Length: 389
Image (cartoon, rainbow, N blue to C red; front, side, top):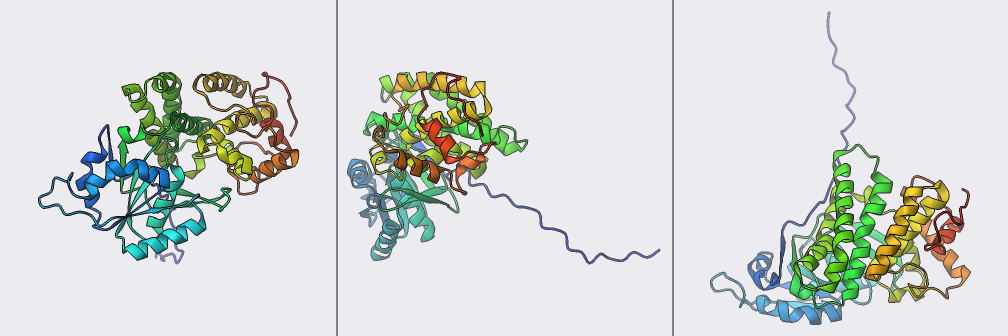
């Protein structure tokens, strides 16, 4: 009996790419002062990208190591650094300006300094220019210092799209002393952004049997519990060990979850609501995490109204109590949007429900009218205002 070789080509095995973590994380009370050698490994001509306020806050911490005085290596020479503000938003226009600054300075690596939008801009220009990136957050308002992701906004501050980057930052420096210079409101917002990981990951991926996604969802649950247990005490004692642990949770652990779980369990309705609200000019006085925190309540309200989900109703009541304790917004009025017109609210809801929106990771269909009903009833008593599909 003869055997003939099959001419069929085997189907290629699917490859899943995960960008889980920065190559190195340095954290501590004076982490930046001890990071000179770690920074100098990446080159001699860094372009330092940030917001004008963030650059001013960080310069006293950063300048000594750029000048070589804080580097341990023998004969350390100053780095030839240049500072540039990214502008008002991480927009296509600001990115073009940053690329021009890279060329003008002949930069060989990027240092991003600031909050979420500044770090997103720095990460993305480094990605586009194929350079190393060091991130130095100046607040705990987001996990942007950790992630391989950048959000792009319009010149008017409206969310447009996100960009997946080739890798997480090469170095993240979390200096608690620098973070402590930020207004406490930024940490509160960071708590709101971080705690969303559980409510979004559990609903989009809670039934997954994939090992890495299970790990991400369970880490999100742990993150939620840490924030419930420690946030109030942390806010009462800035700089304390508990405060540092909550800062780690908001900046680092929140980033871990997105890295391990991937895009599918990163964002759902809470971030979709945020994205829609950014298209309302009146929302621009609030922080990313404040809008996301409100979006969690909206998501739970949708689950309650459209699925009669009593666990979601209980979770919403628990969050309302927690928000009251630490100062997160619970309603449109708390976000400064109490006077928006029905037309404006409908526009935000329609954007949040566009075909490519993260809201469609919910296990049920949502249309703008249903979303609007949830947006105006985030503090309603349990069982009130049930609506049909």
